Length: 285
Length: 302
Image 1: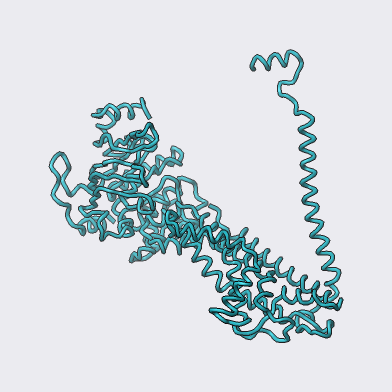
Image 2: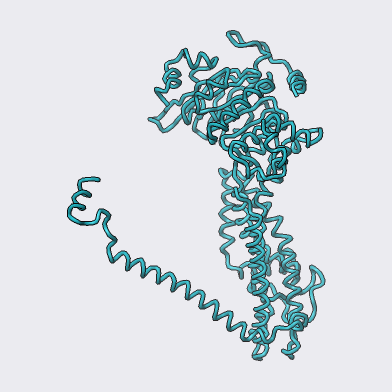
């Protein structure tokens, strides 16, 4: 598994020379996001987001509701392309390649960059078919049984479901469904896992299991997680970006922007910006 | 308790105000009116069924189903050619309406950009077409399919196309609803795994909506089966003593045969119409039962 991962990572072209400043070495950057703006029709949803997402790291995106965290994470696998009115400007380099380049097919992007959603969304099929769907549609080589078992093991679900792979996924608990969705995303062997509030519909015990899982997965994957739960961000992530909402036109229009991005410890204990401090200490939001 | 409540209690009054008598009387009256409305429709249905069954049941027999209609002898007359004609029409109609209806519904739900005026134009027109009286489709069929550009003549194919046009809007509307019932989160899950839009539609959206679509198609076909006016206008055969032998054959259909018999001055032929109505009602009930069964058994609960 890890070997495959390294091969995949070494297969892509090296990133371009690093920009001056305190950025980490180019090898360690998986997403180099530069000045991203997203519009839905005339409305600007996020403004000038610039940050580097690090390889094999958990990056948390926190901030109040409506601050564009989900919009931003959907830029990273081109899910915003599915909204006809959405327009993305700016640059996202993935391993140094422009994700929004003219010759890039968003379908190919999503094969490399998996995503887990806020509400568990298993297919109305068996557990086995849920996992096998991705590998089948992208035409992955290899024995499907093995791929399914490996994905379920990585999703920390194998022992619970190995005797009922033919059972419908709708019969699982919410926490199991969400781990199934994680395993499903891992089955296609992506590079990155994007998680959009993956625990918001789960109880604390299921949430804990998913957090443990994330920390395990960090060895092999880079993870970006949107969360409303600041403790969760503090527990699992190495880097944290704090988003905020800017109100325009007397509150009729809201735009999200990054206030501060840095190591999670610093963001939570010694942030540079007053707004970050107010948010993480619970004075606001 | 608020001051008012305490005061009410002290005075021996109820804390919760009792319903005024007028309200209750009104509720009872309204309920009676609704029962009355149901009663009227139920009574009409029962009377109709009774009337048809009284005239038709004695005439029902295997011979009635397997004989060709006769102009002279009611006792040897039957509905074989009408049954075969209806079956032919159903097959042709279904073959046209299923792919066309589902494809249109998929386009409108999955591909069409609603900001474009032509997509909204198509949508509005489909809604309107569903409300057009069926005889208008008959006139259209006569002018463009039987004669005019297609000039297919009074054939099974012309009848099938006309009925397909008639029920196409209904099929599209029902199929769209079934497709819309598949949650967007399923599409997102599929696309996020690297599936193409077509793979997502073919492997997730269609399987998730097929029960609803099938139900709609069957209900639409059962409407087509009962249509008389458009077939009369395009010129279905009356009392043919042969079954259709292909798409280019002349045909009749159950409602046409029924219509022809009810027009006959001979009372015995009118009773045959009642018997044919019974057959048609059994077919319709069967089709609707299949539709309900499909919906209950296979419809995806999200």
